[in-house]
Length: 160
Image (cartoon, helix red, strand yellow):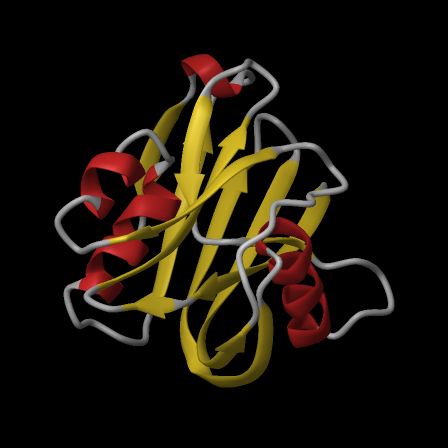
């Protein structure tokens, strides 16, 4: 079973947040908060700060709190994903896309009205907790299961 630890940054902007547009392997576009896989030897917050800087050019000087966690089990594909989403307290710098992975195509400050439309193409384990966070919910753990051997045809079940 492969396991990934991912950090997600919730960066408030006026009535919304900062989102990045990711180009996936199947060439589709998916909007998400900035973040990514935490490398071996990094703490979660060190890795999250690195990911935010790489994807957006922004520097998170301090974090407020962990807003929520997500676990996604995909037993038929042999992986488990754990996400910790942290709210940034102080962010500095200007937006510059210099993603070394070549995935991020755009960074946008998105208002509360526009966010659900952009997030709709992301998996439920992304858009559900982000949407609830935008609505004022903070805290909690979300659990999802992905059933099927291919992501494109898999079904997603929310467990909690």
